[in-house]
Length: 196
Image 1 (tube, rainbow, N blue to C red):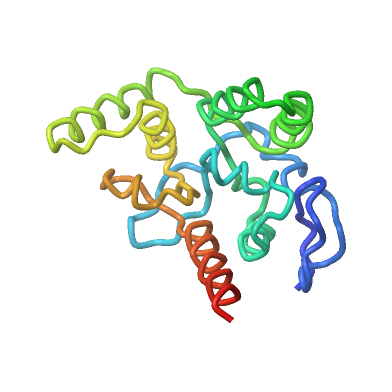
Image 2: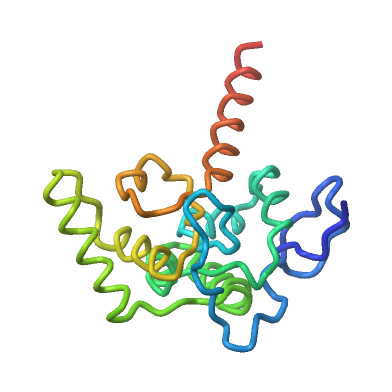
């Protein structure tokens, strides 16, 4: 199936079409906001919030093909990230010896393509609730991760991350396993090649 969606600068995917326009450069809905969260926990999530590792994966020299294939099936209007993720990307760029390249990727490929959801008092309330529950259970996460999770929960979005085990501590957070599964499969394939 040919898809009109591929990240800017991403290699063409076999069976997914030619090197096409950016997956994250198609225009969004007028308000730029995710759909209202009206799904029950057993229904398919219609929109996604991309964690830092999920965004970074696409920017790698050789991103995981299985992840890119899945990503090409998700309409741009259903793709979001958090201002907290953007902050983590900038932190990494400013610490890198390839600062200019990373800054150009953030500003030219990410910010122009994904809808960035702000972190405000509504998400802060969800953050506080999650933090309190995890502190009580002794299973706390870093503040940035809790803020990203709070943004996804508040907007009814499924979090795309490879850190599934990390985020599973948050019972009200929906997780998309595609990146974690693709990484696990790549590691298994590499181990099999090394063994032969």
